Image (cartoon, rainbow, N blue to C red; front, side):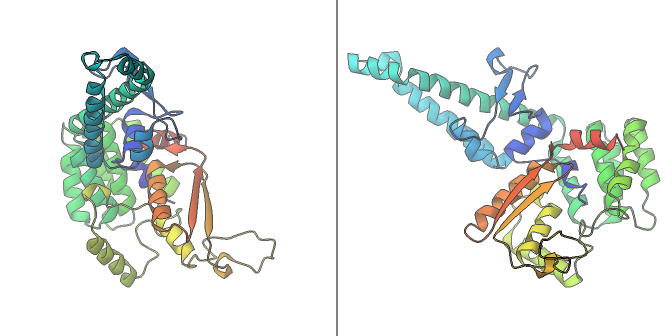
Length: 343
């Protein structure tokens, strides 16, 4: 029901690593990255308690917050290491204290080096791939209706040598998903522009694949607010402007969050969310009491963006309701497109 979320660029730490570097079984391969030492060619990123306190605290931090946090991590480490320099060891007690803390300092040095290396490579890729420019347009395609303006900007980006081929593909797919049912949707012209822009024919075919998989005729309601009244849309837009969007790169909210909000308020429609109950066939989701715990398992996969939003929801609603999210896999755009190729 939501083909948009896995196609978007990500801007939180864990999601960015997964999207740009790959994150498999908590391992990140940095082999071949410029200026990375041999001991950092393969590193572990785990949020499990006791493994990496920095990653546990900042896995959902956005790119800007992350840069500041890593700078502070480096400064704190430098201050502590200076206290334990050999020139400062004046007594036997100082030496004993140093030897006791040496394993901890060595582990801390590796942690700092690891996060500095990852952040450096993320920053390099953001610049090389023009991801800020690409992501701002992705967010606009996902969140606003402006067919003429979007088509003009899309054609410009498809013709640009600074936009990478995978990003041209994702932009074309996002446009097709939003304007599939519009009169004069220009999808054939978009495909032709993608071809001229260097997108291979087998990748251009993924536009038809994604529409077959999750186009307007087959997906559930609500992806672009189609199940909301005009008043509801205006209210949501107003609340967004009042509360403030942290930046243009995080305007999008996955469809999953609308579903969770509806469930919490008891507004899920039984015809859209059928259920099996021991209480009998006459009991529907719209007749149930308001939940205190919601377990969601996404067959086909979830994304780290959805996991981050659920984490933020749980924090905001602590003591009232809790959501547990799982899925058959965790998608980034690459894995999602690979699955589409099988359709």
